[in-house]
Amino acid sequence: MLLRTGAEIPSSEITPKELYEAFQANRRSVLTGLGAMGVAAAAAGFPRMAAAETKLNNLVETKYAVPDRATTPEAKAKSYNNFYEFGEDKSDPAKNAHTLRTRPWSVKVEGLVQKPRTIDDDTIAGYRPMEQRVYRFRCVEAWSMVIPWDGYPLAEFIKAMDPLPSAKYVQFISLADGKQELLPGGIEWPYSEGLRMDEAMNPLTLLTFGSYGETLANQQGAPIRVIVPWKYGFKSAKSIVTIRFVDKQPPTTWNELAANEYGFYSNVNPSVDHPRWSQAHERLLNSNTIFPKYVPTLMFNGYGDQVASMYAGMDLKKNY
Amino acid sequence: MPSRAIPYLKAVVHVLCLLPALYLLQMYRSGALAAEADPTNFITHFTGNWALWLLLADLAITPVRRVHSALSWLVRFRRMVGLYVFFYATLHLLTYVLLFSGYDIAAAIDGVRAGHLAEPWTQLKLIWPTMLDDLKKRRFIQVGLAAWVMLLTLAVTSPQRVLRAMGGRNWKRLHRLIYVVGIAACIHFWWLVKTGVRTPWEVTAVLTVLLLVRLAYSIRRRAKTVKTAAVAGA
Image 1: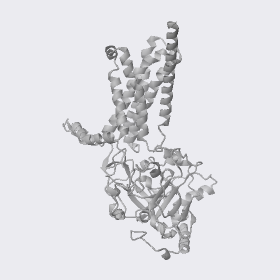
Image 2: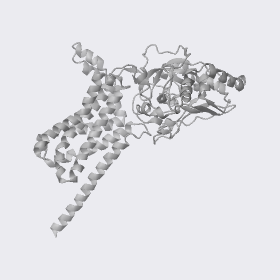
Image 3: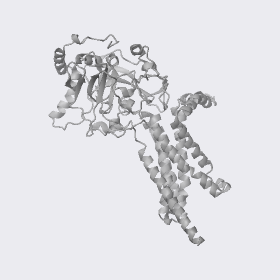
Image 4: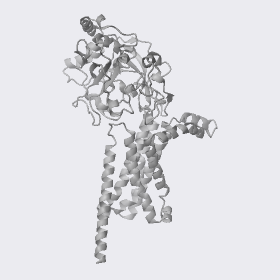
């Protein structure tokens, strides 16, 4: 059984050609925010540099909200990022990521798919209407935020790519370009992350292009990333250049660096400690106060209703 | 350096050593600290880094002084800088106890305001098991606390009176612990960061150089003493 979420669509039901045409139609009509800035910059003769975030239009409101927690101030979410390609300190990416060129951008879709292809970012972004979803975001370092992300379910994109039934995992590979990024030593680049196919197809998993109603800031992993809200933040790969469908669990960066600290699953789990700190609580960074606000960490980051069934029968202490 | 300039110079060094703490206080008062994405994390790194940097500065005093006899007055600042290392290390430890461990500062303050003077203590008892658990399980906390306890010992024995009571030789021997503190602090840093992260390499490199200079000096001196002894024996 490939998928356990009921979201499965047999390969035969999808016609790649039609969808590709849908892509083309959508990119013209839906995408205003992403393209406009780049086109304007090119027309004005500016060098192709990192554009500032631009407003996203026609966002669809959704039921995904965190009513009991205030949203993290935008400035905090955009100045405190773990994006090691741009430095090891959490303030480094905001300082250094201006060198990332997010346009032009394309994503290679390869591996166990009917038809491997390379798709440009406008096409991907315009394929489905973008939704705004407010999710809890839990870092493995025991702090958390509440962030509105803009995108659409990764499942929609995967279905359109028509993976073969033998595809059991999806691997995400991030940009690794020494001309645009620092790529500090000690970590093997490119950054690689992965999800089991049912996790990737879960309706919560968001293919993400923006936050706070704007295109992603470079330091957040522009122009395309995933958001997997029930897992620790590092599972949500940034600045994706390759999506690969594979039959075996793919190697993932932090797991390779320290398997005892970062499991492949890395589901948010208050009962499994990180070797250096407890995961039972988290510092909720959603207000401008000096004294930290501690809240208990929720199993699956509070998304158990939507995801727990995928792990039925698994020992989550062993498969952390 | 004329002796009468020393008190003025000491005042300058005091101000310099206090500047980071004053900067932090200013950040607090201006609201800049609250606007930091993660104030707790910021304060932890700020106090920890300054403790470490001042420790390296302190360890550098002896080798620099040995460059030339005209610099020997530098030694009079060694103990003072060392006490500031203890000061920042203590702030660092307090950050862990009061901000990182889950201590409810707001409740403690409200309690005191309402006349329950024991409230801060009650709050501390609440997080005590968490801290003990941390201490039992996490080696970076063990080595960090060990470094602080050593610094405490050096701070307590730093007054002139204690030096006299202990005798110069013993005192000197005890205060060599400052090198162990330096090593422990670097290990604390390495054990804290994620595998693959190399942020602590700079402080480690400086410490290594300082220790090697120290070692080279003592080897040379020993060789000299042996030679002198041989000559004297002949």
